[in-house]
Image (cartoon, rainbow, N blue to C red; front, top):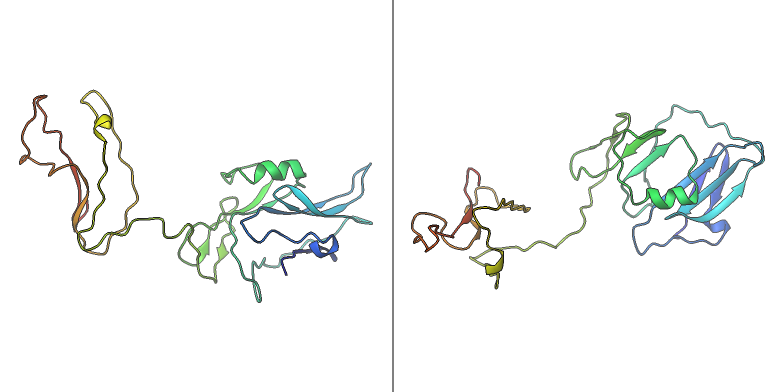
Length: 220
């Protein structure tokens, strides 16, 4: 349990070889690295966790692993979540892996062969943003984080106090951004500090100073 195996070209390494059990308490960035031999160094395989070397194995010779077979992710007896899969035609060093784990790719990076973010959240296709070798998805999507939105029903509402100091003036630009999901055909007020219409009295500054963002059955 809590161990990783990396097998390619007839060679295999495992975190059981070094007693380097993976950290299953959180998401981790794993790198399986194969490096061909050079003039001064032999071929090697590595397993990295967040840039830290868990397993390092020297090989007697370079490996031959040309194949046209499909790549399968997951399978029987595998329980967990995975996303942001990257396939490169270069060997990463621990330092490179440490930096890469915090970088979001565009899909156009040099030496990038495949990039499956697996962030679609629905459907049965995982897009390859590097070379359009899209993945066929045969599992349920896991959406995180969960339970961090307010759920309103039965005329429930929140009140923000002491917000007078953030009132915009007519000289300022303004953007209000938010995520919302409503039941089909729902209508009502999402944000407001009043009715937001001509029923509000005009204040001394010549404005009504009231606004509302309303959800209608045909849109906002």
